[in-house]
Image 1 (cartoon, rainbow, N blue to C red):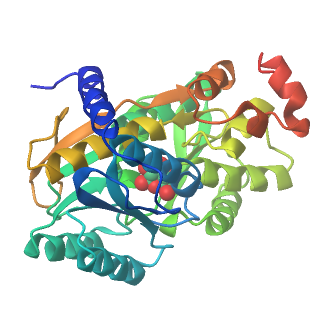
Image 2 (cartoon, helix red, strand yellow; image 1 turned 180 degrees about the horizontal axis):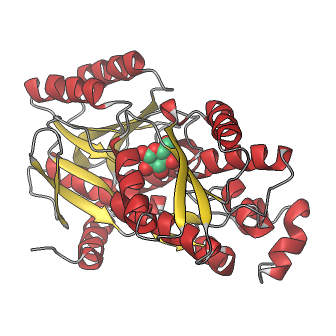
Length: 361
Ligand code: BGC
């Protein structure tokens, strides 16, 4: 049985508020807070700073706020794209006495090794955003990533209409289980449209934006420039495709998808060079992680929305999966109203007219 997450959030928020009422919460530094009054200490390891701006610009502040509001000690660090560094950070967090460790893995094998080590020391782990295949996390906190892909596929189809169209797929990192789900979700929508033809598909190692531009240029050349739509898995990859389309005089003419509702992605949507993005509230995801981690640290069961099957081990991982939101020119305001981005960051001088036209000012 799936439980409704709204009720979970409300109940959890009550817990967070009542917990924070009894502790000072601002005695920590940038990534460390030692003023908590809830038993336990939560460690979070973010993956990198380059595959998406979200990790440092959205997730870190949202996580800091969630932990501070709950009055729990925490440490948030970033592995900067280096799996060895992630393992070292995990070791130091374990040595430092974290009671719950949450990771955004860089690949499943290195993530699973970290989780095994934590487990052997009696430390519970949580998969944050990316499922670690063959891992041992107690919980998985994320968005419904297949739905993310479906929204991207539907968004591209809406922008293309029913005409004949050649589509290039620029997928995320082959080591990220989410990328597999995004692509499967998008294909489940687009493959059904008989007038669409796939003319190229490639995964971008580590979601590297520069490499994405090189890969997209190759796919574009191979297709003789006969590309009518681009399914790009996030805003960074979408931006890379747009830069190549621009160089070929075709930006704005060829719809491109994205994900993360980054400042750049939203600006591209407003400017008409990107057809859509997907908004995944960092606040909701961070709050869900804080709730789950605090439950674990207190030896309680966390509230879940269901389970997610690990496609390698077959294990059903208890999960909290949130709902992603499709964003087009018509509802960029949704992201801003929700606090996902600030109006002044999106509507800079260069985008003033586009913002005005979209009713943002
Ligand atoms: C996340 C996306 C992000 C990508 C690159 C995925 O696992 O779900 O939001 O854009 O990684 O960091």
